[in-house]
Image (cartoon, rainbow, N blue to C red; front, side):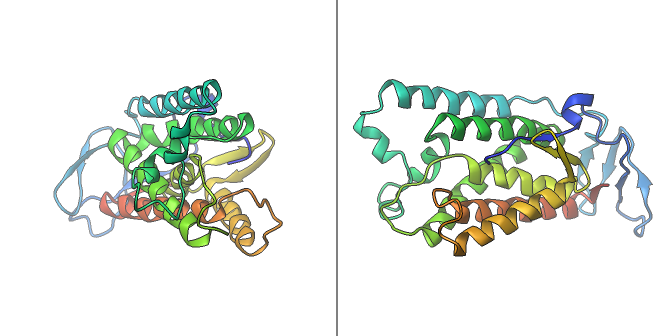
Length: 249
């Protein structure tokens, strides 16, 4: 994601309920709204879900993923001529022959600005989502969006031997999930332009969709990977929202 994007809760402490309205719909309440409280409430399938609006999860894996990306990027620059890099990048023509490419390519980056903007996005959006949904769902959406994003690139690539690398597809998945779970969270693009999370996600979806059909528009960007990753995040967000009847407005 080639831009600077900041959910404002990063500056004020994690208080998504401040200025927002959170409701939990408990089983047997016939749709009546109940204000979210810091205790366990039931879902339609009699499972418990502890309100993380008041007790957010600890952020851990966001930092681990950032550390892995930075460490591997340093290795890329220390040993740029190592022939093994070819087997870690995602080549559509060889992906099924070397299936680990679907995962390893997520942690490779092409340049300083590439990894810088991706890690800034992962830091702000990733830590925000991990606090809300916890480590398991966070890692699931990250890797699912990254892997499906590579499939998206495979279907839209100009050539099957043109490699793709980067965590953008995975980060788009995080953004897509946040757009469903916290649609009105304010995001400041380049720290200047404010917009709701859902508008931000829709805007970049449109830009990437245009990029699929205009080769001259950011030709070195894997637009198909971005769109596929975003779709994964939205689908998973809708599942979580329906499963736990969780709405953050």
